[in-house]
Amino acid sequence: MVGAIGKSLELSEFVLKEILDLYKDIRELSDEVILSGSSDKPEKLFMKLDALITRDLGNEVVSILLNKQELEPILFHLNRFRNLYTVRLETGYAKEILAGHSPWDILKKFPFYKNYLRLVRTEYEGFGLKAGDRIFFLGSGPLPLTLIVFFKYYGVKGTGIEQNSERARLSMEVLDKLGLSKDITIVNGSHFSMNPIDFLDTDTGVKALMIAAQAEPKKEILEYLLKVIPAGCRISYRIYEKGLMKLLNRDFLLDLPNGYREYKRIRPDPPAYNTVVFLEKKSNCSGIIE
Image (tube, rainbow, N blue to C red; front, top):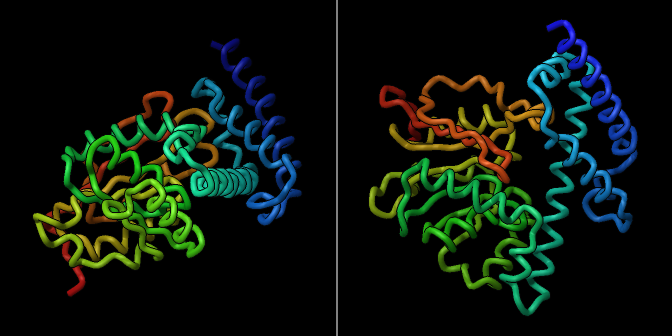
C-alpha cells in the first residue's frame, strides 16, 4: 500500500511537470494567434495537451493533482486554450466544407467525428427520442456536428443556439451546403434567447434541450432555464469526469440548482470523452415566464 502511494505521488509529480511545461508555452499565445494565427505552434500544443489529458491514469494520481489549489488558475488557462483551439479546428473544417465539392466527405474527416457519433447515440437513447422530434442545442459553434449527426443518423431535427455572430453565420452556411438548412436552424443568441412558447406545443415543440460542454457558466444557464421550461422538461449537459479530463473542466463539481432532478448519468464509451447528465424540471417547481 505504501509502495502504491509512493508510485502515485511520483507519477503525479511527473504529470505536474508536463502540465507546467505546457502552460509555459501556451500562456505566450494570444487569443488571436490561437484562433487564426499562421503558426503551427497552437496545433502542436493542442495535440500535446490532448494526449496528456486523455492518458489513462489512476484515480489516486488525479486526486493528488485535483487537490493542488495552486494549479486551478493554470488549469483554467489550459482549458481556455483548448476551447479556443477547438473553435479554430471547427472553423477550419467549416470553411473547407464551404470551399469543397464533397462536403460530407470533408465533414467525416473531422478528427472527432467518431466521438460525436458515439456521444449523440448516448443522448438519443438517453432521452428516448424518435425521428421527427426537435431538440435545442446550446453552444452549437461554427460546425454544428451534434445537430448534423442527430438528423443524419436519427432524423431528429434541431435548433442550435450560438452567441458568436460570425460562428452562427458560418454554421448556417455549412448547413445550407450540406442540404440541411430546412431541418436544422441556427439562432444567434444565448440561453436568454429561449422562450417558453418553444416548449409548450406537445406535438411540434422542443422535446429536449442539450447544453454543450463548452457552454458556460452552466449554473447560471440552468438557473435561467428553470424560468423558461415547463415541469417535466428534459435537459442534458456534458461534463468531463474521467482521468485528467476533469482537471480542465470542473463542471463535474456543479452544484445543481434546486428545481431539477437528475434521472440518469451515462459515462463515456470510447472514443467519446463526455459523461452525459440527464435532468428534468421537478413538477413542484414554478417560475415559468408568462
